[in-house]
Each structure stands twice: as structure tokens, then as C-alpha cells.
Length: 127
Image (cartoon, rainbow, N blue to C red; front, top):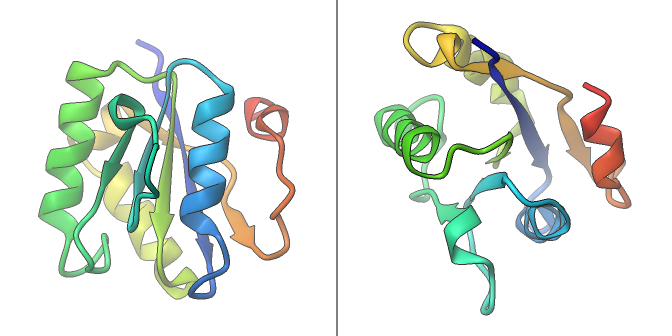
């Protein structure tokens, strides 16, 4: 069974993480995003909003439920996950690698804003 690549998108507040995820999933069919804030007109089927909590700490259960739903319902070829604080990227990576999600997901490249602001979808497909 092939595991779906998951990319963590992190950066400073208001650095454009949600906007980057929306742009990237809009460029490719089958890509799915979990963001902290949605803009009007976003592709709803490929984008879901996370509650305002750290996905690896207080929002861990909600993250697991949303990812499980997406894997079952959307069957994405790639997942982009917004992380409000880059300091938690390692902890989130461990949580995602654990059972049961670790059987279905594999960590891809971490995207860090503002450094990766002009990232193209092709850069993530090389993973």
C-alpha cells in the first residue's frame, strides 16, 4: 500500500500559510489541505479548517479525526497541513508517524514561510 505524502507548512503568524496551501491545492487535483483560516471562495472539498489549537498538542484528536475522514472520503494524493508554530513540527511529525495514521501517511518536505513563499507544486512532487 502506498502512503500519502503529507507536508507541514509552518511560519510566523500572518505569513501566508493558509493562502499558500489554498494556492497549491488549487493547482493540483487530488491534493488536500488542512488550514487554520479559510478565505472566501476556497475549494471546500479539498480544504478543511482546523480549530484554533496546536494540532500536535491540544488539537491532536481533532487532527487525527480530520485526517482519517479526508483519507476515507477525499482519498487525497497529497496532504498539506498548516502548523501555526514551527517549534512543534518535530512533535507533530512523531504524532503523524505513529499508528494508525503512520500506516497511511508519510512525511514529506516541510515548508517554512517566508522562505518558501513562491513554492510551486512541482517542488513538493519531488518528494
